[in-house]
Amino acid sequence: MLTLLRISGFALIDELELSFGPGLTVVTGETGAGKSILVEALGLLRGARAGTDVIRTGRDEARVEAMLALPAGSPIRARLEADGRDIPEDEAVVVRRVVSRIGRGRAHLGGSLATSADLAAAVGRLVDIASQHDQQSLTDPESQLAILDAFAEDEPLRAEMASAFEAKSAADLVLAAFSADARARTEREDLLRFQLGELETARPAPGEDEALRVERERLVGAERFFAATARGEEVLYAGDGAVNERIAAVVKDLGALAALDPALAPLAERLGEASATIEDVARDLGRYARGVRSDPTRLAEVEERIHLLQRLCRKHGATVAELAARREALAAELAALGSYDQGLAERQAEADAAGERARRAAATLTASRKRAASDLQRKVDATLGELGFTSASVPIALEPQPLGPGGADRVRFLFAPNPGEIPRPLARIASGGELSRVMLAVKQALARTDEVSTYVFDEVDAGVGGSAAEVIARKLKRISADRQVIVITHLAQIAAHADAHLRVAKVVARGKTYVEVVPLSAEHREKEIARMLAGDPPSTEAIVHAGDMLRKAQKSAKETETPKRNGRRTETPARR
Image (tube, rainbow, N blue to C red):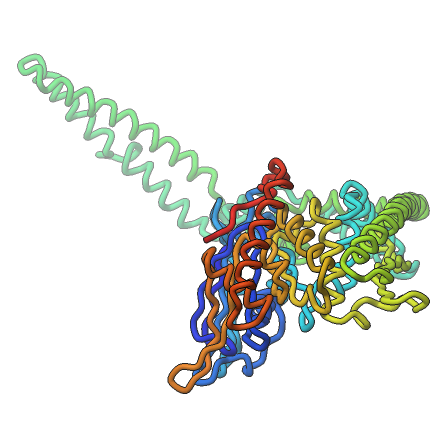
């Protein structure tokens, strides 16, 4: 739901901030006062194109910002959060669009930069506009399909269709990859056999490369290793005056004195332990020295083995520890190529089964859509009759298209305004007023299931008066029980049913023209409705009539008020 709209430097608006609540909000004003500027501003937030001509004279940029409340379980919230948008829990998402005279424009969605496509995908699913200049979702083929599916309430069928098509696509890719031509398969088989033969011959063991590097160092520096370890044994234990011998003498002297001074006993004991340790180290050094030998033949073997392992690692992009797993993978692939015919048959069968599942899902979804299209057309045509289009019809045509994740249907909303005329695409022949009333009829049918939370209608009352105007007002009021509705209107009957009323006026100050939008109190609503009835200034009779219309509208609202529906109140008190 739209909760706040802020506009700066846009068209004739200098600075404007408006708060919106639930229910039905009407926007009124004299012809040419600038009411449609609000619609154009919202269109920018939905990703519409914008040139520098929308920037107010004397300003460097035009800026439009909005706050859109998203329920915790909203699919749009889930999609935005999945895209990494910053949407704090229980808070609104902030949308901003800036058009600049210098450089490129900017857009922000949920705290981060966005493209026009991002805005269309997110805001376009939250705010729907029907106007003469901005036909929006009702004329877009993809949105028409979404409207029909929402009316049909066949989410399980669509989920099965998407899952089946994904499985079909995956199976087709596997089959295509497996169905390489025979020559390529033979070449691959030869390569695999050669690479596997190398690894089978080499049989590298995990950790072998590190052990070989240590052995190579010992072989290269054999003389230095022997000299150091032999000298260590000599100095510590084997030679005349060795360290261990001298320590033993000290231990002996201290032992004799420890009888006179017990404080020396621990020291003598620690030296004894050190002597034993030194003796153990000396013996280990001796064994190491006797094991050291200079062996050029073995050094050459080690060097060759290290070189082989390095070459295999480079070729396979792996470490020595990973070469064993690589050998198993090559063997498995080679075995699979060896049983190509069987593997091809298996993968073909899997692809056929996945394709059949997708086709069945598409056929079931098509059947559901055909039934829903008939029901939706009947409801829309009936509502159009109530709105004054007694002979108009909106056939909904389903046409086949290549199978995809959404099924095998292309939906077209057609329009036949008069009897005997061939229905043509709605986008090509419906005027702004006709389109608004068609959308009104569609939205009434979708009021319970549509994920759009805000409907904006411009010129929904074009060419309507009398009882049809009252019908439109009641239908807008009914829809506003489930969704936020914003209507630009010239009809007093519609304005009387509003929960909130905004008046747009064009003023001139200091040689400049400005558009102002003012929320009206109860008293000023009465005067504005009287102006809509009888012109400006309104007569006393018009004011009395306006008051009577407001009271009747409020009484009608109380009589039709119902309990909460879909978590929303079906009626909301008028904002003052």
